[in-house]
Length: 253
Image (cartoon, rainbow, N blue to C red; front, side):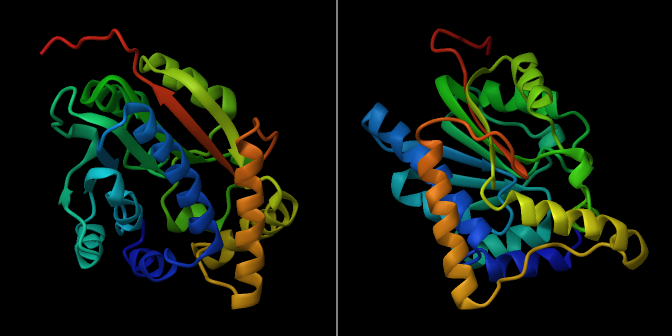
């Protein structure tokens, strides 16, 4: 990610409709897991960015963040998040240490050499029955200047993500598109930016709209999250997944 994007992210995460909708969806699943286990969780946010999700997850247990960017770690610590520097390509994680690992908009990054190998490492760090929560950019034809700014290696198809989760040893509980209700205008904007961005250079989509528009879009995302409690969505600009390590799995330590 371009270094300037971390400042943009830090300033937007508290209120921007996209972050609010995504974080509330992640929190709903992790909160449900805490209720299922009946105890505080040990959580890792792998690729924590500027730390907002770690901050939101903190009431559910012990939360750690790790990110490859010193700039991201600096912003995370400004939020009071226990974050450390680490490259997911070669990160030494304690085996069977975590109940939940979140990895939000990370695995598509150009510096991730093998998403399957990273997922395998995350699975080893999960306790038996542990949960992995992913969000990833979807549909290669939506590539635009935003992807240039955030250094996107690939945008995923649903089948591709399912295959790679399975190859990493996960059982897929949920795999769905998200940002579906707003997909038509987003797709049009992305296609136009895909044309203009090649001439103008990379610029991300992260900009908080007016308070009225942002509040309206937050409502749309909350309505979509409610729909996701009932089933999958057919299309969207992101893919969201909840996958699980088998209950009976025991790693060789």
